Length: 378
Image (cartoon, rainbow, N blue to C red; front, side):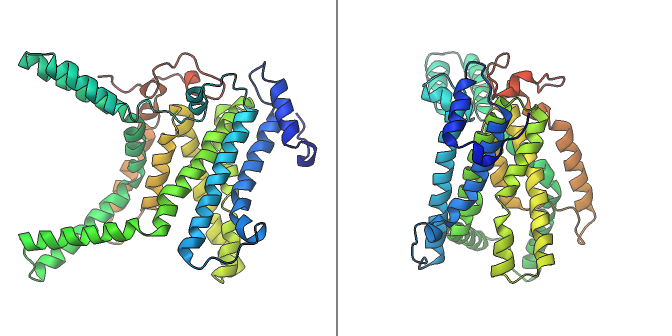
């Protein structure tokens, strides 16, 4: 199907064409591609709106500057959700179902409170036999575990890629402990109290750091909303193949990082070749992670799965492949990488995250996956 020029399809035309196809439950490929491109460009362009469009004075501080960008990113995410909801053939006005289209679901995440109340009442109050209480406690713990699997399983799977990094951090921690003991600092209550105080000071400084909020909260949340929750349903409804969406969606994701080239080249005074190499490395990592995040979203049907993976990867940075301290770091990385590949499909099985996998809409493809290896059920 030919790709029409962007000027020939404005927002009213997009809505009209999407409405015309509502009966078929699909969105045309040009509409899906234009909408995704528009959302990616708007996510970047709105960051410069306070200075260019609103003509606001320069922010008095760096924190004010970042808060402005936070608000712009939030506005972009909300408008992208509205645009995607208007184009998608959603034939219900039920808010819970509409949120479910974008993977914003409470099941397998916050149901622990309900399970706790029910479990305490049924298993500990109504049951008088101690043996039955023990058996009921095991069932309750099992239910609690499975209510958190949309957070725990993707986080554990992602952490396998950082096995080398975690081992290296353990080596550094061990070396620091040996240095402190060799200098005469013995293990005592005062040393524990001092370590705890240093940890609390670090926690306080971290929580008040505006860059921490950007890297670990605002950026992951808004990027996953726009580039996963909004774009993937549109591309799937555009009848793109599942693996094509997994590879195509990160391209839009990488467009949102091209503005870093201008910032590095102009503000940090990098030479153009060095700036190209730095941005090229960032884009390569962005495409790889974007494919993995899209895979998690389509497999699980939960937005929280790629979100926690995004936060964790931002916290850890690039995985450690090698260290001059020990060659075991490389071995640990290889073992973790092989474990990641081995558990990639079993730990993202749709039946682990959804009560019904035999029927789903066109924007939720988890019903089309056929599992050969399943995680053991409790």
